[in-house]
Image 1 (cartoon, rainbow, N blue to C red):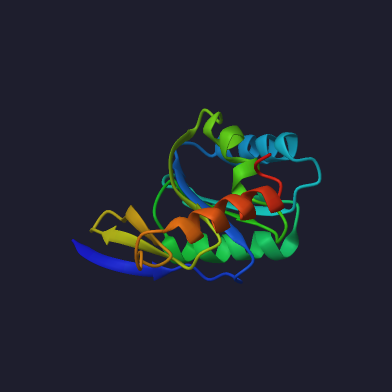
Image 2: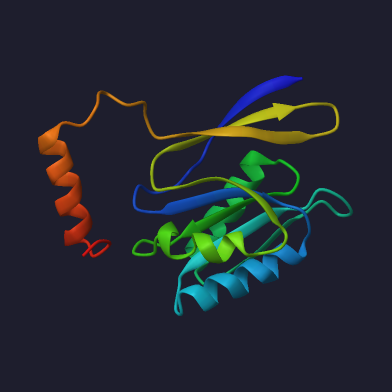
Length: 161
């Protein structure tokens, strides 16, 4: 077995969700779940089929996000993995619950706009995702000033009353 690190390629303002599913039906079900959760959402989705033709299956509402999802799915190259790229202005918090209800999805590894590295195990059979590195390590523990900033920020962007 060989361990590899795959750097996800994306602009800083693009959120990415990486997960694992079990059936090509995922492509259509994720499309429907996202479109129902956020009408007008702009996204690209790519799923690595792990048997049969073993193609990257895809769908999306935004050409640039779809191309980005396909590119990163190929870089990861792990069977039954998927990459969802959300266009700037669309956020995981608005779609995660809908994704969790898609029957084919078995795991979500991350949902982030941070730089992401995917840790891959490669064997003679193929590749699997062991986990992800999402952003950087903590530099300390928040103090009173940081708590006040966090609370104000969440209210300013409309996620808390």
